[in-house]
Image (cartoon, rainbow over all chains, first blue to last red):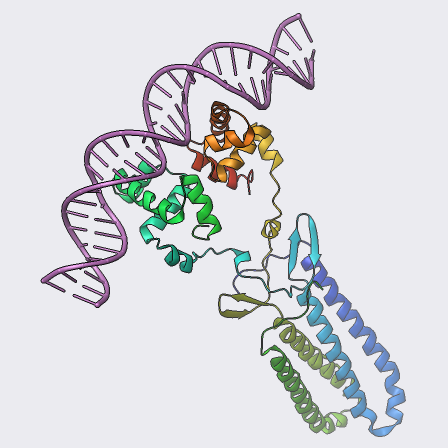
Length: 172
Length: 172
DNA sequence: TGCAGAATCACCCAAAAGGGTGACGACATC
DNA sequence: GATGTCGTCACCCTTTTGGGTGATTCTGCA
């Protein structure tokens, strides 16, 4: 229960319709059974069979209802089109995009936490001076950090470093 | 039916267990009902009530079974942990990522095709000189283009322009 | 205890980037 | 034919960025 229900517009109406349909089906069945009841009562001990039949029928109906009710929930909206279908596909985590840095790559390149932090701020569009102000260090410090960072990434410019950092999953 | 079922390891076993549980419950209920049956039979026309009761019970049971069975199917795998839960979340179309420029935004900001082209090359990490070489124009031309682009975006630096361009869906 | 890695800072210099202004040709629109 | 937009280029000047070197402090590890 990570999030509240935020289903498609007509979902509740459809659920109601299904419940109604279920009720009608039940009613019809009861009527039918009642009509046939008398015939069954002639044969004495068929009550058990009758009950079992009713039980099985309603169980099946219940299962169907349960399925149809839950099937409405996951609606994948692509562009404008609404596809109502159960999602079976495994979502490869990265699709819901809670970004995590590729620690392996970070260690592999020998990038320190400070350097990574500065890479993030560069990607955010800050100048060296702004970064210095944000981290309470001198501009020279930021410059040395970024210099070493570019070395490790093999980048010549900060824009290139950002691009490389993104493809290497060091920054979102 | 986008893909075949590739559910979690213990899914089938659990489904079987549920069905068995369902059967046992049904059996127990039938036994109980049979025992109470005689008492009900004393009162003559309570058969209908009895049937209705059975029907309702089995319907409920069926719904429960339907729910528990379907709940197992969608399994989101994050890292190593398996979360068995119905997927409710709307997946934004952008997740499947066939990038298209936001033409509306482009016109809204008054960005020309050439400027957009240069923004893309800046984002790719090229220097003004490299861009000039790529587009067969002078470096000064690239500079004027980028200058006007930054004006329109309200950016002070090329890194900032890239960041803004990305959030505005002008570049992937 | 001493060493390695990190974070920090300074200084110098060159290259790149950015701001401002002006100008020219092509093309479309009115 | 006038106007406007777009793409092109030049020049000048300031700011930012990047490279190189050296030094200091702190911390964890051998």
